Amino acid sequence: MYQPFYHADQYRPQLTPPSYWHATTARPTLAPGSGEHTVDVAIIGGGYCGLSAALHLARDHGASVAVLEAGDIGWGASGRNAGFNTLPATKHDYAGLLRQLGPAGAAGFMAAQNEAMQLVATLAAEEGMATQACGSGSYVVAHSPAAWDALQAEYHAWQQHTPVACRLLPRQVFAGMGHDGPAQHGALHILQGGGLNPLALVCGLAQAAQRHGAVLLPQQPVSRWQRHTAGHTLHASGSVVHARQLLLATNGYLPGVLPPTLRQRTLPVISNIIVTRPLSAAEWDAYRYHSETPMFDTRHLLSYWRRLPDGRLLFGARGDLSGSDASGQRQRALLQAQLAARFPAWAGVEIDYFWRGLIAVNRRMLPQYGTLPDDGSVWHAAGCFGSGVSTMPWLGRALARAMAGQPPTATEAACAMHGLAPRLPPAAALQKLGLRLAYTAYAWRDRFSEPA
Image 1: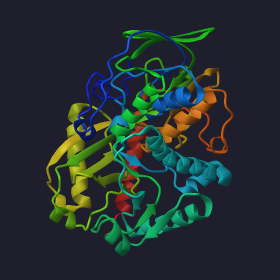
Image 2: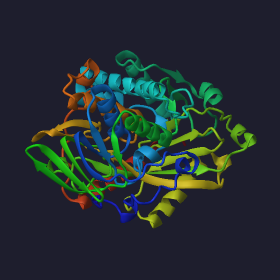
Image 3: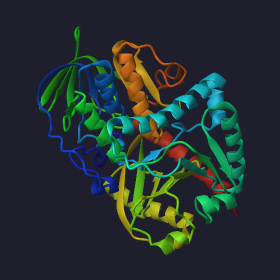
């Protein structure tokens, strides 16, 4: 059972999330697995990381694998995010990366991010995944003149130190390529990546992993974990899995069997998304908004949006420290207010879908992966700061290579994501207090940075 960091309404794996993706995506039927399985690697978590690891272990290394997922495959963030195949998976700007990692570490991290976006396209082509990719890269949209100045500095740092192709678009140029209106003061166009259907991607990974021999066990929450000299035994509601190695790939949905070494390393954060009714051509023309490229702004409490292929607008933001269904309705209203502030002509537009879920952050402000210091047969990955669509499949591949005994590639060795983040306060109440203070500080900084 999941650790109840938030209200129990956030932890109901038996229920299908009420997302736009679940309403519009054909999904393969995977009956709950059962029985006893003996494999090389057991994986807890059927999202991008766990499924990518299973696929690469089975396909590239000939390993036997079983994936246990408490809900349906992709029930967590992997199946219900906004579908931004974008970078970077960090809260740092490039100056922050330099301060924490140094020039070599920052460059290594960005090289891994760049490679991760390419991996998604490669996997889709190799395995015939219909991910419904759209748009051309992503736009980081300056929300104020001061943010535009900072964005120019970020662009020059990326140009000088990273392999990421990008370009600056002043306000009038972006008005003709992205959208016009009060929500933008220019943009940084990152040329790799784009939008996709996140549930289609996770279903494609699941089908590919299964096709190459991985055993998928959906609706099998792990209730007990036993360690012994031969490895690990996992007990679920209808199955038992024996494995030499174990991968914990649950990200923000922290399982009750989480080992002490991993506790207080990851902070789950609620992200909220609305999707409008289809907008008319005249409504889109109000802001000259015709691009399907994903966009997110430069606010500390950022919002993100994209035009969907069927003419709807998806809009999302972080928020909420409760997680109850009642608080979700307040978050829905706040999202509608933010949408109206960004695009006043669309104030009051009907909302057809609203859903939420947990991403994962940590004190290091970078993803973390590797083995437990006290047990080299237990592997972990978490903490993509809401940008895991490409990072998590990349981490799954890197972990598969490591679990198969392969040396790291040059990019993996230099990626600066190895090891464990520093611990958070031990009490959930203190962690929530820290998150509340961070939200408050970010909100004040954003308020003072808004144009007059």
